[in-house]
Length: 374
Image (cartoon, rainbow, N blue to C red; front, side, top):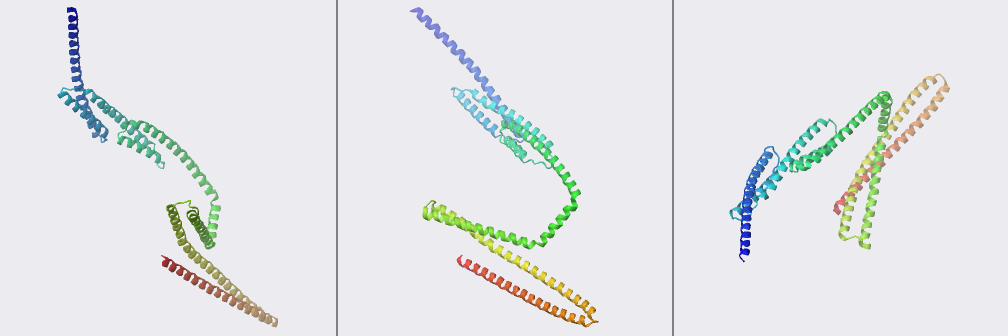
């Protein structure tokens, strides 16, 4: 019985000694960890001040530092209340801030080197849109404190700069060779080119009104075709809604409203094109009348000089006098024909005036009817 009590006493004493040693060791570790946490908080604050002094953002660093400080304060409170505490939980945040500083230094140096390479590689006339986008993305990563992404983006930007530079060099060589070839071709064939240009200008001026009439008529035909197509779509929409019920009421209202707006827009354009076409027709007919008058003047001058010459030759014989009479009759007949031509021209002009007045009245009536409808 005594031996059992002795063994129990020795075991209890041994446990007390072990617990005392463990508590002493824990106290020493806690003191060291607390000092380390204080040191790491001071170092983190210095890192934040350094980054801020160079004009960079410190949002991430500040958040990590606030969390570390809050954890440190909570452990101090627990230590004051003699509860379980552990300052080691502060250290990972300090390590994260140190890692941010390393990434910041690397990113800063990487961006400065990239910017120098960009300035040395870019030449005037180079298309740098894609490069500028990538440079801005690198800058945004630094601004948003994502320093760990800068290295990969910088490598891609280097590759893009080299690619654009090589393509720009090839393009420059191609343009220089093309310019040289074009210059030699122009020097060797400038006469032909100038002749073709003059003929093209003369042809355009001669047939300008006809070309404009053709273009205007083509626009009108296209608008009429589009209008008929839209009307067909409106009819199809009405059929789908009222007969088959394939579309809903909302879809029907949207489609009909859109198609009606397009038709109204076409109806506004067609009268303007018609007016332009009428003006062109007036110009073309005016040119035709001018040509007829010029031809009449030429014919009259030819007749006058011809009659004078013939009279000089026919003054010495009766035969010549008879021929003069015959020619005088012919000239009278021609004069009568010219009078008839002039009358026809006047009739054409009167008809044109009547048509123009009728079209103007029709347009006014249409406008009045539209206003009444509105």
